[in-house]
Length: 164
Image 1 (cartoon, rainbow, N blue to C red):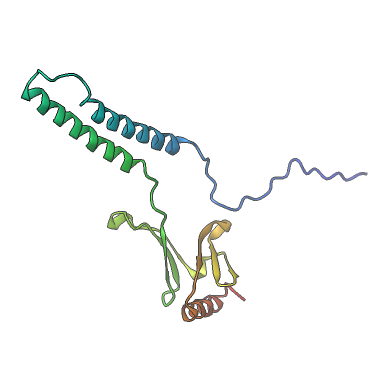
Image 2: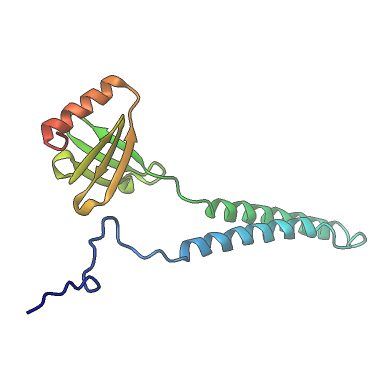
């Protein structure tokens, strides 16, 4: 009887958020930037067209079209900017970590809330803490320069049993 190890059929566990990275958001942002540049180009080129003898109505129409093109250009460029990264708030007394989106409405501000007891792993490297949720998913990585805040958080995590 022989035993053979079959390493090809085994799959390694994945640590991290599993999602496919499509190019949809990248393409949309690229199209928005191209639209912004095109609108700005229209706003500039409308004044180059020959219409000297057409009168005041045509000049007013050119001013209106160029103003609207500039506004559309600004709006498209703003929409093409990437969203700001979430901020991390740590409530040491309450023993929880919150990921917060600053620019969102009040009902959508909190992205994720996790208590210290629910954390799977907390790594300490120097003054940097790395917080991982269930399944090894990275929640946040912070670095504290204040010695008192570092010591307080370290004590709270030791009490919760996350750091030995």
